[in-house]
Length: 155
Image (cartoon, rainbow, N blue to C red; front, side, top):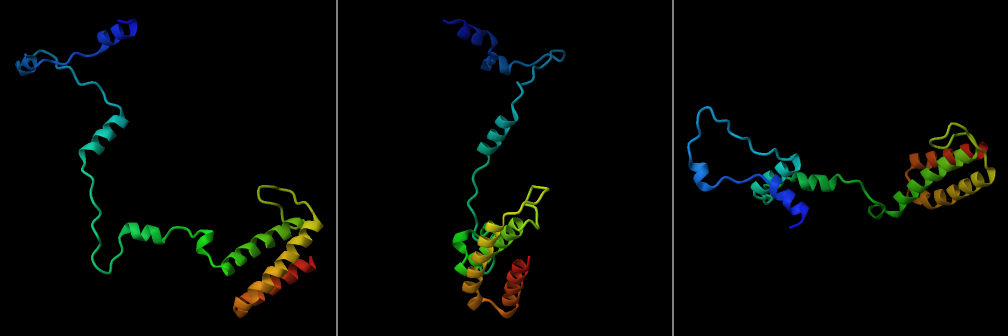
């Protein structure tokens, strides 16, 4: 036997035999408390003790909490139609144009920097995207897009 095996035998608590556990305890004798469990072990035991519940289908016409959570998840790029994607890209290019014009500081920076070549590319790209989006935009959105481009060109 190795030294580690001997150490385990010495430190391992002895389980009482059936005869010892059936013996009555003296009133003055102190009863040893069981060894403390870690919180993870206690949670594992609690999980093992609880049977898994199968989800109960909701009554007709009602939505379960799981279904609500699925409906409330954030949309992904695949969920958006191309016109919503264009709107998103227009927002990004608009912000980039203002940053490269040196009129707005980049996120996380305190100072502005000017790069007119990149600003020009952003504005020209915006114009192309706005032209593609305009047929699907309502009157208010058309005005906003036109104003956005005019403001960028003036600056």
